[in-house]
Length: 496
Ligand code: NAI
Ligand code: MG
Image (cartoon, rainbow, N blue to C red; front, side, top):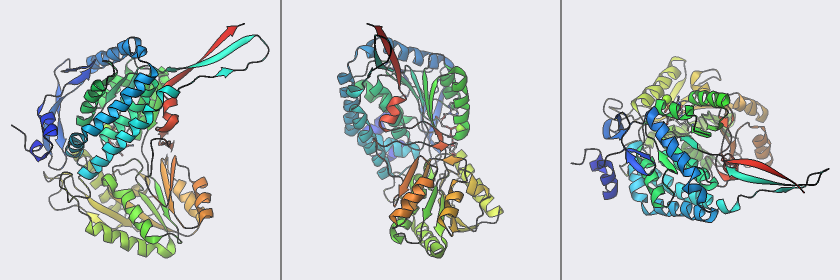
């Protein structure tokens, strides 16, 4: 019998997937957790369980890491670079062929509108295709050394077994961002999806097997933070890649400091978005609206602090409030919905707590709040919310909310806004809207952020690096920058 939640799916394949049992994917097999534990993944539009999923524990971590090690030292090592490239490309093709199933599973499990889930599928395909080009281009160097008769060259080798821990906001896409460079470099991996959204990662693991990767190359360990922590602690892991909260990222970074595992971290943000007086107003307002409310504000690079040059402030605020009033918030699988629910009861409580704190600190809510029935079995919906009358010290201005909440503030000069924009512990993204090319590049240089968007928000490409300054992380994803994180460099010296 299909469950009530699965019955919403129109893809036969997605429904069949939900109805199956969901084990851990270890060494090419779907297996129950060693202690038999499971957890339920929840439909955030209704608060109802979708299905049960295996809950990996410490014993399962060792099994998965062992399977990855066996692949690295066995069959994976024997796969040539061009064969590896072919497998990565095949995985992209398989995602394309199963795109409707993946998008529906994602929309159900995460709550995002189906159209957004389809966008994530398309971006996943593009990402894999980009990295499919790399295995055959990983080259060492010959080094001219002085003084002695030495022939010196470098080898670029896979870093080893990778632990990859991803969040729930873009479940499939973040998993693909992680596995693509690892596979391109020839590394086996254990992927730990978020407990809120395990489904598409499990399907991705199956498709990786179908694409021809040897058993044990892609292992998927479903579970929660404890599962993730056990994975980070495993002595068999050589490299950790994490996307998630800054709190957990600091802890993982500290652990990797002690064990000297290689680590990359993609963490939180409180990204400034600046509209200058000479901006194309319509484009700036539309882009800024999407920049914060896309994915219901659950994006690490959300443009959550809006600075508007004083003379435009009232106009921009009233246009944004107008868009917010018209926004359609609803279940992801409803084609009318522009914005889905928040991911969980916990996130709903966190975001509504911030809205209450803003009001208590004296900010003015010019748009937003909760739709009727939200939170009480009516799904975790929050309307696009906009605060004005805020000061730089308020909690809603300083802390990452990770929900559809924007704070808007006026500013006078370029130097002033650059200083205020940078007055944050974070540095993931920043944006600006202007027709003045000189001011644009002046500001782009001043802003301390890993991505700067000029007259757009959230643009990206598999080839372009993405990552954070300051507490927003360490290292870069995407492009050749991320490939480097999965390679060791060995210098070989021969006496001639
Ligand atoms: P989280 O950082 O706790 O979870 C992210 C991933 O890490 C999940 O797979 C989780 O199971 C795992 N994890 C949790 N604790 C761990 C530990 N001690 N060791 C290893 N892995 C661990 O994030 P959470 O609790 O879901 O969200 C809290 C806040 O974090 C959000 O409100 C938001 O501000 C931020 N966040 C940022 C994200 C980003 O894209 N930068 C994504 C998700 C959350
Ligand atoms: Mg957490």
